[in-house]
Image (cartoon, rainbow, N blue to C red):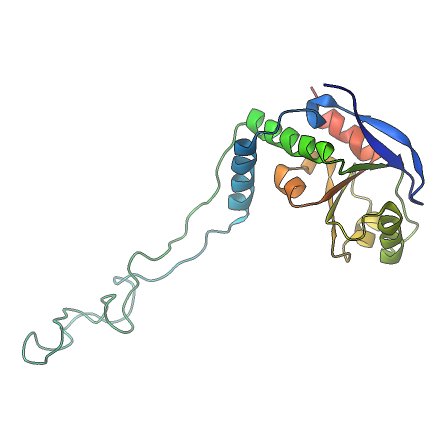
Length: 211
């Protein structure tokens, strides 16, 4: 496989050249099943699992038979806590549970590489040589995206560390999400149309994920 490159731009939108992307992350075969498992794990791990309903042993009532066995024309009932009765318990309802699933580290890394490789194959990766603001300013970040041609695309910005001014400048933009390089995951990559990396963020990705 040949060298994988991405355009390098400055915040003014001027192209400065190209950056070499590591083949270990951006030049791998796309494994759709691993992507499915990774997304399933990510979404499941976000669930609280606190849904709970009362079964017939937990609702108020019970005790005496609600009406006599015969002669009423109604179906026979032994308790008003039955799921068949108004105000009765719920049959087979949800109870608190843990939706977390595990995925081996090698498979998680392979899924991440698959998602990154797909973005590289789609020419959806851009590198910013620098990104900083003297103070939080959403308008300035919106201008950067416009000059890069990313205003109308769901964009994921990858930073090397949490710069308060940058993060605050991004959080009110509808089509922009931010993440740190070491927290990058397949779900966030599949949920965006364009991947925007700072130079420092790219170097941090190499440190964390390239062995």
